[in-house]
Amino acid sequence: MGINSERDVEANMQIGPTDQGMVRIYIESQGVEIPMDFSPEEAEEIASEIVAAARSAAKIG
Image (cartoon, rainbow, N blue to C red; front, side, top):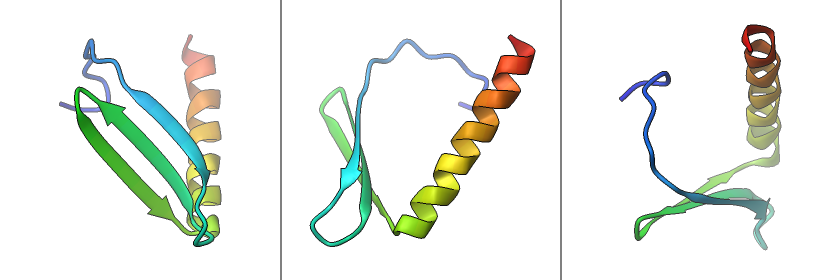
């Protein structure tokens, strides 16, 4: 499965700070839980990548 492969899967995503000063992206789908912790700097890089992808997608759509 690649970035352009469509799947009909529902998932819940939560994003927030942890009590350890990290940023957690938490994904739950079909009984699988995936917590991913990032430093604030890493989280800002990810946010920038998401914004850049959204801008690129808006140009296509």
